[in-house]
Image (cartoon, rainbow, N blue to C red; front, side):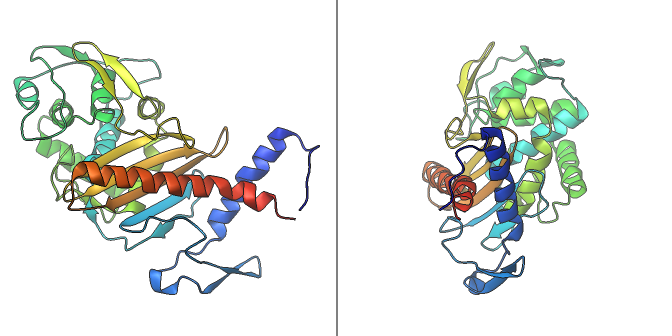
Length: 313
């Protein structure tokens, strides 16, 4: 075991990040039946086994390091319902069309009667709003991404494109432009089981979404106070633990639990990951708990890799 106590902390941090990038780049993505076979890393044999990464025991997942082209996947990457992960694309499309600078609130948007009527209807995740109230774009994005309000997703869609149907077409075009070939959006909030994607496709969106400073700031917020609504909490309870700084939860009975996440490896690098289809066809609460637990184990396992790799001598 080699100890380097005299190496400055900033150097050790940079080396750790590079080691993680090397680990992610060197690992070979293999189907389930091929795990345990030998791959090669710089001419030396490396064995890919279930113990290499603590993948979820069900569903599908994908991980990458920000700035790396390598995406590691686990499980069959077939389209499955993604529930409220759809709201990340909704926010992305809104901010692409109506950009906000850091600290900027943006235009005021009138709450229509439909958004007010939909609050508490149909067992969906919604927030109570008052028709005629005028909320800023940033305030509505908080309501969209923290408590995951479906009525706000549809309100933003109507404001941006005139109708939810027209907005969904914009979502689909954006998915196409990002290379999300296995993704289909049929609604702005993700309540419809026909809104489907894969973990690998969701990482393509996560890369771009986290490049938007306003979105990045909102998804890292644990709670916020929105005038006319009150205090709202983020459904992503991993925030502030295991380096997690985002991104979005999603859960319905058909979808199970889903989490699109971002976690710091050090001061500058981000791990991005998606965990989908956990405990599908149970209850949204059970699915979400499973997705959060599986994601925490995956994040902690990946963040430990630079330390364990760097300590070998």
